[in-house]
Image (cartoon, rainbow, N blue to C red):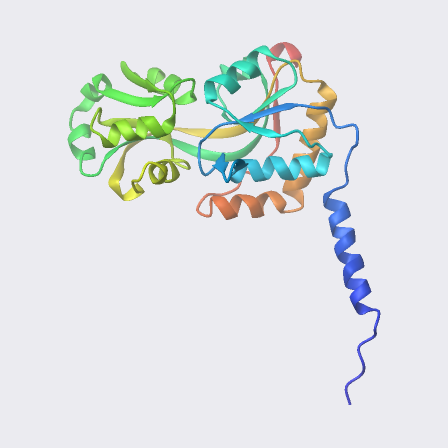
Length: 269
């Protein structure tokens, strides 16, 4: 004979759910206000249904829930967000590629993802381009204004850099045969191509130039207490497994970075 199910079990389940929710949303009501910017760089961050979406957006939103921060995430052109980060107080910008030059200009928290900086071309053209040897560095290469890819291309020796306003415009130029080389992050290329009506099968990798760690960036004037709160929230997010779940949802073929670093300009150390 089956024993009757106690009538109070549903209440216990509800209570457990409430406890989990409270743990995730345990907030600091004194969370410092920030102006938060991101750019259109899918699938890491982009606009969908008139609101910010993407892997990094969901991570930032999870951190905001933990902190009790309700500042809106604004999607703007990269140059505008980067300028505000360097010039204004209490600005956060994501997702930002780490470089030694940028470490001197801002505070960075992460990493939240790791991408490869690759050079792409139209399908079937890689062998010809690699056959140029060192002359490949004299070929025009496309990327977008203010991005870390401009600096990477120049550092690696490319002398003709075609700079567009957005990564989508750069990809359109490549597919339109305006140039043969396109430099961007591996995690974003398939989504960028999809946005302009093409697929990842229409391009091929020519070479990998670098490994790129992506961070949340804060303006130098951001209070140390605010940085510490966001750092502790990111540590918690990774420790409890929420970070990994979000990362795998968007980047299933990439390993989620589990360390947490705060990088400050040398004078602040």
